[in-house]
Every structure is written in C-alpha cells, then in structure tokens.
Length: 307
Ligand code: NCD
Image (cartoon, rainbow, N blue to C red):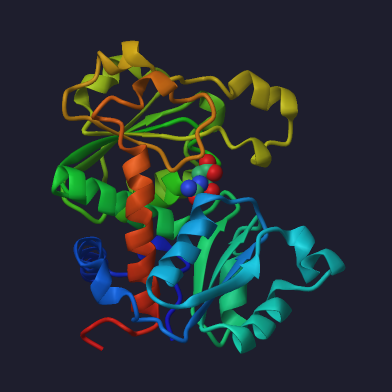
C-alpha cells in the first residue's frame, strides 16, 4: 500500500507517469468516469480549505466514486480529544483512501502508520503540500512545455508557505533550475529547505527583498499569501501582510512569457487588475488540480491501466 505524504514519495519517473495520466484525463475525461465506481474517499480536514477539499471530492466524483468526511476539527471527534491514530483506524473501515489536512506538521505521516488505506497529505502545518505541488508541476509543464531549464521566483511567505517548500523539493530534481527567493527577511525560506535541499543539491538561488529588478529574468513567478494562521504575533502579521502586491505596473517589468502562479487563496498579494493578463495562470491551476487529484487517486488505488 502506498501513501503520498511527501513530494519525494514519487520518483521523477513516477511523477512523469502521474502527470501524463493527468493530461490524458484532461483530454479524455469520459474514459475515467467509472474507474472508481464503488470506491470512497474520506476527506479529513482539521484546517480550513476550499480548493483542496472540494477538488479531492470533485476528483473522486468524476471517477464515479463517492465521498465522505469532515471539514473542520470542531465537527469531528478531535474536539472530544480523539487522536489522529484512532481516527484513521475508524476511517480505514469506512473508506478506500483518504486525504488529510492538519495544522500539525507530520500528522498525516502519523496517521499513515496506523492506516489500512492510502493516506494523502493535503497540507500539514507549515511543512508540505505535495498534491498542490503536483498541480503546480502540471500547470508549468502544460503551459511552458517543460519542468527543466526554468528560473522560478517564489514570492511572499517562504517561511510558513508549505506549497513553496514542496515545490522547491520537487523541482530541484530537474536540470538547470534556478530560484529567486523574494521575501521580507522575517519570512525567509527555512534552513531545512535552504541547507538540506538547495545547498545540498548545489541549486543556484538568490535571496532578495524586492521583486522589481528580478521580474525580467523569471519564467515563473509563484506568489503566496502571508500565512496569518501560523503567526504568533498579530502585529507582526499586519506589518508584513502587504509586503508584495503584484499589479499592472510590476507586470510591465516582467517578460512576455512569465507565468504567474498562486496556490490561492489570494488576499492582497495579486491585484485583481491583472486577472485578465494572459500570463495570470492561477485560475487555470485550479482546473489542473482536479485532473492531478484524479491521477493521484487512481495511482494510489492501483487503478491505472498498467495495473
Ligand atoms: C494553500 C495551502 O493550504 O497551503 N492553499 C491551497 O491548498 N491551495 C496556500 C495557502 O493557504 O496560502
């Protein structure tokens, strides 16, 4: 039995296969509409979510399966003190696969140890978010045609932004990747990514506080929200929340082919005035997320054609 807890749980070859499958689903959705008939996904969300939970549910429904779950810790027995390990034992009796989001780093990994069904990490605290990363990779591959030879600007909350951590871990496995890390000094990338991932793999990167003079060099600009819920100090959040606002003026400094990605939700960091710019791809990303999550469910349930 396989779980998806960390972006590196799939090898580069397996990732390519999964993204190929997601692209085939995009082209031939009808072919997949009954693949999960009789199967159930449990969505166990101890933290707020719109896209991730609904896209997992949409993915399972598109595959002909059904869904059950909860969307907040307060509506589950966690509020009575039940442990994640006990909850997953129950859920293993009700569903065939589950997606879990939890505010504590490592909670889905703990769950996987007691689980009899595949566990998908749908975001654990400020740590990782592998299914968003696969979505980001499908978006980049579909719209840029490659995952190598890219200069990627990551902007905003690089400290707490789990989507950023997972994306870096995954992309360093491709040739000629360079990162421009744009953040206030308080929200710089954590050392377990800088040292253990970037330095350890000899990946070129720059850490800067301003985006303006870097925009012309970027193939991808990945914007992120300042993660209010991870701050200990409200004043600090208020001071940092509007550190970057991508607007028309800044887009004029960027090159023609630069794609703007954002895992969403956005707050103020992308002005709505650029939503119609052809380089703004964050809503396309949302559509790709459904195909990717369908491919993840099929892969973890062993329901791909080669099985
Ligand atoms: C992200 C998350 O939950 O980490 N959202 C998502 O899953 N698309 C990003 C965020 O909340 O800022």
